[in-house]
Length: 206
Image (cartoon, rainbow, N blue to C red; front, side, top):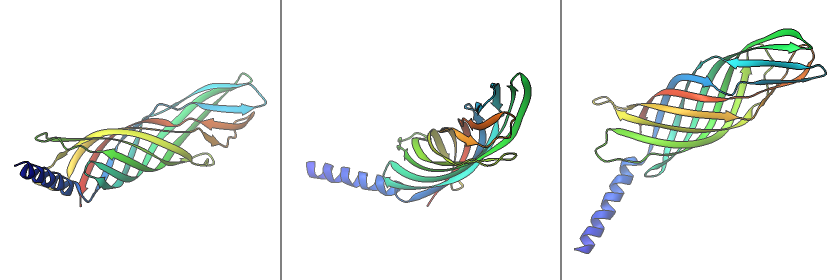
């Protein structure tokens, strides 16, 4: 009897692993709120001011493969946009700064995707690291920076059609971008980057 129970347990684990084996493709899009948006200037004159970023958009996709039944590795590419503007004072002379920032994130993620029996939602949580390349419309593009992110979300079946819809919340941050500047009196500038992304996802397995 004990052997039968043991065999039944092994068979159940094997079937569970087989159900999660393989991989998946995900497409996603949503909104991006940049919460690290300060710009710092270095120069021979006294420079002070404030900067803020508008809410932007995000879109991308990822490819995931299961390393074990509940653990997946992902390769992700996501584009984020945000308008950045600010007012500055250089030796008490007012100046303004305005630009559109687009970032290209190349990330590797590890994601925990547990199976919850009889539960319609498929939750997941993960973390990733990679590289973000920024692009400014009106300024020379800085070098990319190392980035890391945290994410959590859930999927649900779209019966009878294949694939799953889902919602995801993502936080990404990088080191400061060193950006060239033509602001009078400034010899260098750096900009913070980081924020929260809310995504609608579509995931299909293979």
